[in-house]
Amino acid sequence: MTRLYDDPASFTEDMVTGFVAAHPGYVRQVPGGVVRAKRTRQGKVAVVTGGGSGHYPAFCGVVGPGFADGAVIGNIFTSPSADDAYSVGRAVDRGAGVVFSFGNYAGDNMNFGLAVERLERDGIRAHNVVVTDDVASAPATEQQKRRGVVGDFVVFKIASAAAEEGYSFDEVVRVAEHANARTRSLGVAFDGCTLPGQDRPLFEVPEGRMGLGLGIHGEPGVSEQDLPSASELAKLLVDGLLAEAPDTESRRVTAILNGLGATKYEELFVLWGRVSRLLADAGAVVVAPEVGELVTSLDMAGCSLTLTWLDPELERLWQAPADTPAYRKGNTASAEADESDVDDEPQLAAERVVVLAPPDGRATAAVVVRALHEVAELLHDNEAELGRLDAIAGDGDHGRGMTRGSAAAVAAADEAAAQGVGPAAVLVAAGDAWAAKAGGTSGVLWGAALRSFGDLLPDHRAAVAGDLVAGASAALAAVQRLGRAELGDKTLVDALVPFVAELRDAIGAGASGTQAWQQAARAATKAAEDTAELRPRTGRARPLAERSLGSPDPGATSLALVLNRIGTVLADSGKDGES
Image 1 (cartoon, rainbow, N blue to C red):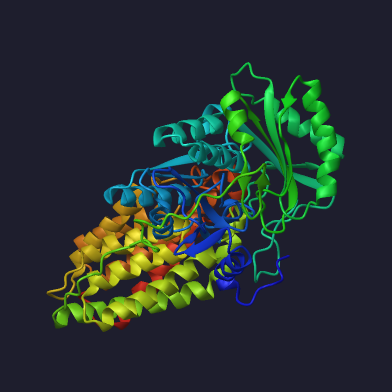
Image 2: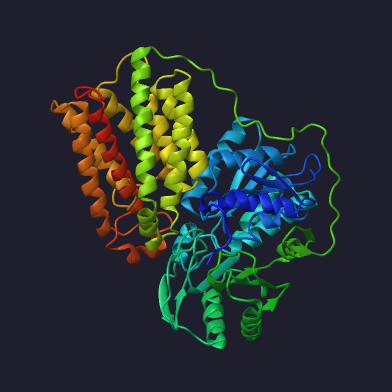
């Protein structure tokens, strides 16, 4: 288990501080992650990797000449925020654009997608290359739904080498997507991993058994079977990948036999001896294989095999030199620093203009701030249970993410309210802070929901019942636009849709804002409980749909908790006819 930390809540920040201190010749820290210590030449396409921490050497360990220009670093197993990705993208841009690459997870897609939009509004060309190599996470007919696991490393390396050679923006994107299309991975787990501060792993594998088709975020395998011998496991992995071979006549492949954190090199070498013979027997010519820990999952016991079917271009780029803190190949000379026309730190946002609200607006803002304080306390108290629910079919980070996000929202709301602004400005500040600090899918969704709700609250008068309906409807629209989830997908949408419908109906029937909110919150609670009977159709839980049956969705559960607590705050505010 993970034993060395001061405060589990600051584990990632503390790790980054130590990482930068250990490798000052390679990296420097910027808001949201790390970038190369020396700037690259003007006109070079920048390649940025990223995702949650807990996977070292991925992602920050491969920043350096011949590899990535920067890495965006999220909390453990949690997507970094859009602000983080934007910040790192701004820091590495050298005038030729920024190519982000990451595994196919909902939170990463949302946050990096928003970062691309922001960079392009700034006049910086940007694009996302999403890795989809995990054959166990979706059938061959739905490859676009597959997770990115250790194939991340191959795609990152090839894209980075292309950029180092001077490829254009479009050509870097092309070769990265080409590498992804020719890469397949399959992994197994012997035991789960433990988040810092937790006293038990996210999942357990029974003695003498093995999980097949695990994820790299602490997700268990999609099935279990008896623990095989090394030779039997080698055959299982090789056969599983060869059956998924892309449509190519090439017999040349590169391979990564990857340890996930607690399976040691000696074991991997035993396994590789069997794997290499099986590949040779199948007619494959293995080029420059890697055996070791390249994409880990904290202290998870397990391993995975990745194959990439090569052509001359991919083979050249795979073997190109690289020099990073955690990965070195061949000889490469670091480009001289070029400080001519780029600021040391990215400009994240223009300073907001403070617009003072009249007394009614400030009074509503005070209720909003009180509600956010109550919500943060509630989520802190329920962090462990929400994490437990999330670990059943996900990565167990929901409770911690909600705690971090709500705490950041409270701090931002307090600061905004102290300036005398109205409820809209308070919720915009709170939403932005929630998204930035929580990261992941829930972070971006809650941030957008708070922002959208706040936009519909008036500053010039007291809020009334109709404002609640308008705000809740706007929040739902924002969540569905970003998350692309529908009723029945087993997400927070399954609780939010009935909440908005019940709120609208109750107010239409003459209920006060407080009464209608409490009635709608009860409907959301029932809907959240009913998600126990659903199979997830989107997000990280989808590959483990059967495992989640019988357990409610953590996102819907936390939403229902929050809505009920807000109802209590509205009642305590003494404005029964208003919000």
